[in-house]
Length: 208
Image (cartoon, rainbow, N blue to C red):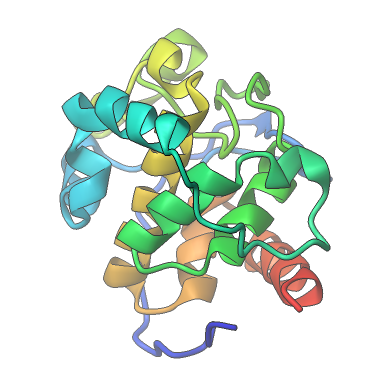
């Protein structure tokens, strides 16, 4: 099991307040918003998050493997989450993340439903905010908050969604220095560490 407290550097917040409800979360909240420039820097920090043109080939590779690797995701996770095991393992490995952590985020965000949508406009398994749809109306200081994000149609693809979400988590870990803060800024704002601790509790309780 991976050590979730191996980083200790602090982080900082750049955000705007917008009322919404998000995915399968148990509380009402607003999405985390960043400036377009900061969002671009965050995603550029992790190579896999920016390699959007290669996604279809990656999906083909994952789905067509003659001998797919044995699933290492804990059987404590529900079948609706474990069905995406190949994709989770692939992108967790590429981003140096524990697959069980990615599975915990998916369980919290969508319950494993690739067609999940939040009232704030987040899409898919890892509930990523796209650049179009409802999210296009969210404005930050330098313009649209999600200009550099994928489209709804891209994020509706399970493999692409997991790839992008895992890349975001890895980028946030690099930026903020630890998993707890990365999860705090991945999830809804203005709830402190409630979301982060909820995901970490899911991760720790089900990774054995």
